[in-house]
Length: 161
Image (cartoon, rainbow, N blue to C red; front, side):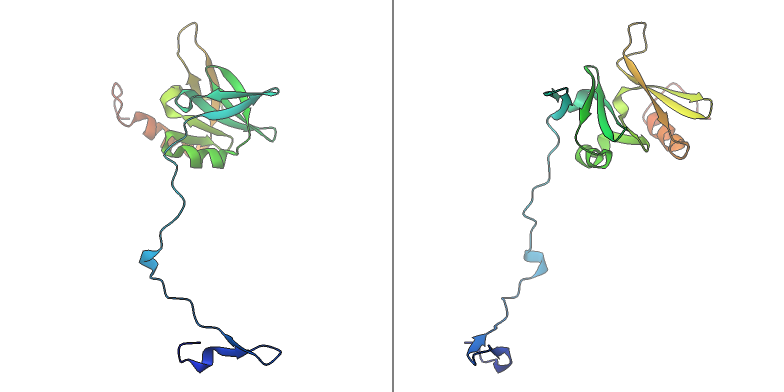
């Protein structure tokens, strides 16, 4: 019953013997996670009024948290998304950079880093010409230096100051 270990036998309230033999030992190295890691986001689903909008993640400029909602910005426009900025960062990984507590941006679409009164701002979008479609995002003071370093990494055309 209990493999010769009388200390593993217990009695229930009626006086019957119950077998409490231990479960077989499993080595920690034999345990494998059953969940697969995501290979990447293939589409982002957002809302526009009562319809769903499907966006290519490579064409997303930024995510913004405002008024208890999260918005996604792209060339197609601004849409509501049901995820928090933290969940979005976890889904996208290093493709996005948090520049402010309310903004996560795709660095591939950053067109301009500008010092403004009271801080720094980013221009994000599809171009800088007269027909440009862009948005502006604030950069927090404590993230400005790191952001500048990341943007200048693997770039040419500017002397190191």
